[in-house]
Image 1 (cartoon, one colour):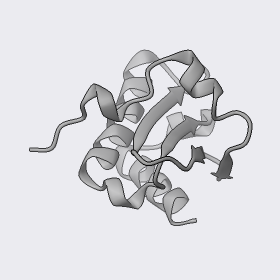
Image 2 (cartoon, helix red, strand yellow):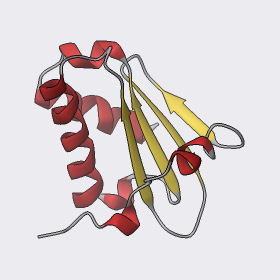
Image 3 (cartoon, helix red, strand yellow):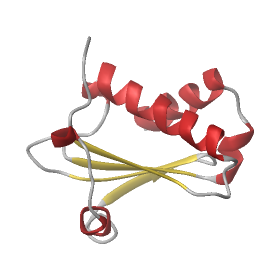
Length: 106
């Protein structure tokens, strides 16, 4: 089983802020991906309270982390932040995964 170690995560606020400027981004109605090319792949997930209650926000984060863990080559190389937009909270698990995969293909 693949793991999601701390070295593969964006943990500090400064790491997230570093992607605000000088990074590339793609988005859809449900998700926004921001990334900056680096040698190592790392993931950060942002889900605000506007998306839904805690169990829904946790489900979204779990789905995104699982996809990153199982299919890291689908994500851009470097630091990646996935930002969930509020309409994503209305979708079911399969639809959330489909939105993420669609956004990654762009």
